[in-house]
Length: 361
Image (cartoon, rainbow, N blue to C red; front, side, top):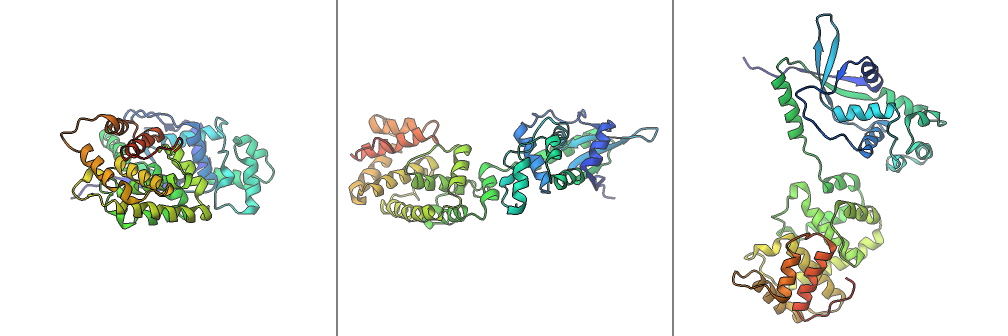
């Protein structure tokens, strides 16, 4: 006869949870639970933001333990940080997010109240005129609870491990995809990612994790800003926010992006037999080099043979790296996504092709 892990799903309001908490019914430090970093305040506040807007949050996993007197307590198997964030808000340790009113789904009628309570702690929110609906929403929010009925602590511990192993966090681009999915910017990024010239050069990127779209974003922001940028999550997030609905700039950028791709194709480099040219470090450099040529009216024929010679020499096993080749190699060896190293690689290629380098790029 087959054996299955015994569990049961139910719901618990925040009010019911907190009542049980004050009665000391929860054990947050079960022996089988791994130690984990405490959430930062902004992450806790964001959870409260979600609850007040009735967004779904992941289920909480608990193990009921009934003593001989019929008293029940609960080991928290998974969801400790979420529950502690709720407690922190109730007990005035954290405020609501300062950007609470910036959510797209709010209408103008409700935005004014949302602005009034943004960034405030729970007691101050309660005092705000008209905030009763939000207070009621918080207390009545339904937490999804999974009860695990198992005496074997090793099996319960394995549940915790499976939850954390299966729950792979979203990477920065996946988060941007969720936030900006209907914006003109992200729609255009997806279109640019499918340009045939780029599409067959993405093998090294995890397309299923949207790394290709993040890389194309980096190329596109070079065009939009007229200069290279650091590729940190914070910088890319700011660029997405800046250009998300700027259709005028996006239209101009799309045209310029297409010209750069045409220039790259005209160089006729052999990407098929030299797969290293498809590495993002070199592909970004080639794109920025072509972007520079397009914007400075430098024809393809003037640089075509020099670019071919540069990469043939650069990837040769017999090359001794000196001069511009060494400058390029040094800039391709560390901090490859920083603006300074991107510029260093482009400058090395420009100088190799006997082209002047602008003071600011």
